[in-house]
Amino acid sequence: MNHNKTWSGRFNEPVTELVKKYTGSVYFDQRLAKWDIQGSLAHAAMLCEAGILTQDDLKLIKQGMAEILDEINHGTFEWSLDLEDVHMNIEKRLTDKIGDAGKRLHTGRSRNDQVATDIRLWLRDEITQIVQLLKMLQTALIDLAQKNIDVALPGFTHLQVAQPISFGHHMLAYVEMLDRDVQRMNDCQKRVNTMPLGAAALAGTTFAINRETTAKILGFDHICQNSLDAVSDRDFAIEFTAAASLVMVHLSRLSEELILWMSPRFGFIDIADRFCTGSSIMPQKKNPDVPELVRGKSGRVIGHLMGLITLMKSQPLAYNKDNQEDKEPLFDTVDTLIDTLRIYADMIAGITVKPEAMKAALKQGFATATDLADYLVKKGVPFRDSHEIVAKAVRYAETEQLDLSDLPLSKLQEFNPLISEDVYEVLTIEGSLQARNHLGGTAPNQVLAQIERFRQKLKN
Ligand code: ARG
Image 1 (tube, helix red, strand yellow):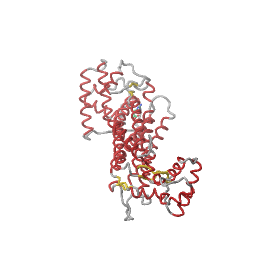
Image 2 (spheres, protein in one colour):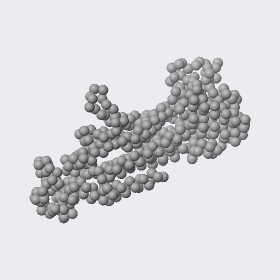
Image 3 (cartoon, rainbow, N blue to C red):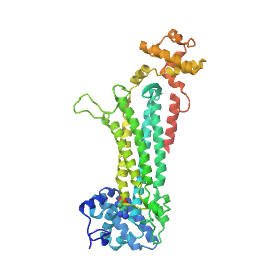
Image 4 (cartoon, rainbow, N blue to C red):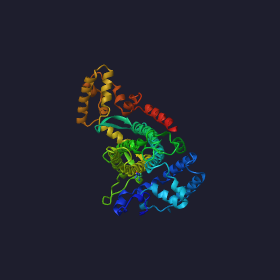
């Protein structure tokens, strides 16, 4: 009885419609078609070199696959759920076109090593693109930082005004995070770029295959050394999703800040209209939808990480159909990440910084109190005492609704007689920034040095 399935010879009845839908993957894994064909062509070339396929077979396979790729690219390829997945759809079409040569393609191979190879080839390419996009976003942040090196805003701890910070310095904190993201993606790509093909179903194959040849054709740097591990390993997918989750977490944190800063309560920045939307009821509204959605979508990517890691946790060796569930989370992670990075770089370029609002916030928050304490330490007062003295001065200024720099010298001297005219240099915001002049500090010349370091790094 033939139910039109590649493996139907063994079965007495066809699967039900619901089971067919439940087990089928073609509606999502068809996006692997290009890489599936790439893998098949390399496999065929290797089989030919090893004398397992003839030159004529190989020629036909190449021709057939070129036509199929064309059909897929033009949207004329007819995907069939009866053929379950991308692999069998393509193989069937090939066989329809070229006959026996198409049927020979699967010699020494299984869908298990085939699918693992396809995902790795696909993900390898996506990571290359993601790294480029991460660098693009870094550049946008660096450009914004450079324009605003001398703009001071309150740095916060506990979301309470802490100390003045260069806006450029603040942006560069995110450039650092993205730098680690680039490193993580590059590192992950090394393990992605390891070839499972040749493991066949799980144990290897009885044919005299040459895995080095296939790896070389496909540009794999390494070859999986254990056939069982080769077909069952999805560590690389989990690692990638973890790295992607961290990118999203970084962008979610930045988004949270942009949202706060755009609220009139802060009023530190404005985000270009093309990234915001209005309200259907409140005519005055301009909502920062894009950063809000980035914050929201971070949850979705973190969810995929949880999904994938849970997918693997109880699987016995080797391949199990569970692994088919790796694709949708991976695809969605890649799509979400790529869209987010693209839109973000553009949004950063469209930010308007409002230095006056930042300055007003600094004045309200006694941001230079630590500078006054440090000033007294430099005059010989032990830090714990100077901390106490300044706390009293802040309490007084607060009741008078004045900033420390607004207090007259005579008043300041009531808190400690060592205070002299030069105190106003440290009480200014500019003085406060300049004073943190060491590696990693917020002094504008340090910020500039970091910008130059990153520009250099991004050239490579
Ligand atoms: N569609 C399957 C997947 O995504 C391909 C491998 C199927 N292998 C099997 N033994 N049923 O994992």
